[in-house]
Length: 110
Image 1 (cartoon, rainbow, N blue to C red):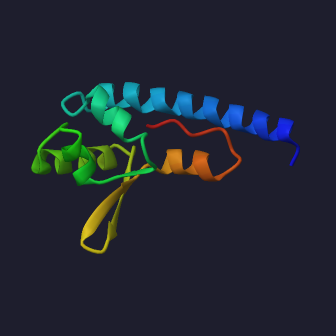
Image 2: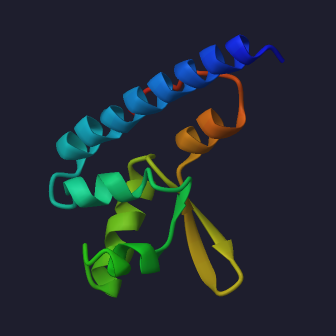
């Protein structure tokens, strides 16, 4: 692929990720204000998945509360819960899709 085309694609992906990062902040702040925190919203964009351990390591919440926060994000449709062995991963499907596909658009949360 032409380097200029690659650069353009990367730019559009970056812009789409920036838009996506703003979108759940507003949605969670309105739908689940009790669990909203800037740190939690930043965390779910560090990787396309989160674990309870990630939340506790960033000192956002203790283990039990971290579990509640992530499960609430599943309930409102921001994350998807996937068991992996003895652990649960909380997948951010919209971010994962932007990172792995050429599409630079995402559907709004409801």
